[in-house]
Length: 610
Ligand code: AGP
Image (cartoon, rainbow, N blue to C red; front, side, top):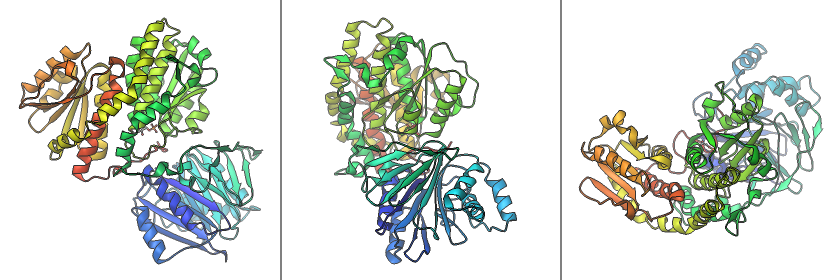
């Protein structure tokens, strides 16, 4: 979603800001803009609809320079994507503002400010912040005080950066609901919505907390909490590669990240399974005490992360003997739910900033959940900071909007959680060892699966002229079918549905004809004979099938069925193994269709508004 970069330095910051925007492109956006204050205290702004590249071209023709500046990539919420709605927004040629989030009371504030004579140029909610700061500055000692007064009047979510051309030594930033991270340099300091934007200039960061307002200047950062009291927010060095944002030899981030899965899983396992047994420290301090008392697990997540939670429910109930419920965060947060005794709330999120998941966690604490665990890929993110314990997936930066390695590393974490809970619920040592061994076999197994890429690329041609597809699975492969359908629709724009194969005859069978390809995930397991009957139901109605199966499942290709041979693997890790062919299928279909694989239309990587 929207991205923010800001800098106060002695050197010209325009290139730093633009490079930061490029590194935030993966989040999804529709327009971009930059504003800088030059040495003569003049404010200049350039905005463009479309890609950051359009902005770069505009800046080549008319360069901006100055040591203090802010920049933004916008993902439209209020007002269509357009140059005028792009940020930064300006008030009276002096105040410039970028903002992530949604100001819910923007209409009332707009009317009030119009009454004071302010003229609005855009349809955005953000513009109210700009004029409000300008108005408050008339009765405030400085920009910091004006922003502090302004944010008190805002309802909704914001991560915002404000600058004033008459005070080029300072940026004022404020956070409530949308993340902001301060980057510390030598004689220069930075602000961004995501550390990725600042990796070329610093590795030292501190995260603002809810309600914080900060004043950032070249040599000093002052942070104030919601009550205006000065506070410290510990600065930490992060160990993320500067090149995480580089596609390397790959045509797209999604392909690179798909092929990185064996390494991502190896990294996620490293030091967590020792001598064939789970090291409970993988879940952080106090985890074992929490796990000992847990009698029920409630999982909350969105999108792909929700699918990994769905797989986990099969594992937790069957192998760890504990009751488990899973719900989409946007539903959970708006209904009254029952909290079973000794429940553990588990959130799952790649970014750790998904607005609905974060709101669900906060609600869960209010309604009586005593402990919370997050499975997350971003250290220091809001979900990690606000949960009692965390399991960090070590997938590395995931740039493609379509989640790949984050999903499979989440599954690895959830399988470890199954062992961690299971050992307090009578799971035998032998079973624990078996699961750990299967996990350790995964990287090599996934290398075998990735070798199928060229045959899946050929298969993708069958889908290029299709408008719909149906994915089928049973048991723990049903969520994998759902994930396959999500991947296909999100990057190739082909409408895809997933069904638990047993549900076919209750409706979707009516859709079957030669124009509806049916993709089946079919490892040999206890449900294979049931699944085969469902496959026959499709075949009898003239459906065209693509079956991903291992040799033990005994499917044979013929006129109505193409079988793609997936390496035989242990049952327990089959959901992870069968995910990769579906990721590759959607990737190659998208390539044929010529869609924007890494930044599919209308989507954002990190969904920080609800
Ligand atoms: C899937 O490919 C998505 N990009 C999307 O569904 C994503 O999983 C969802 O928005 C949740 O994000 P999170 O894991 O960062 O919370």
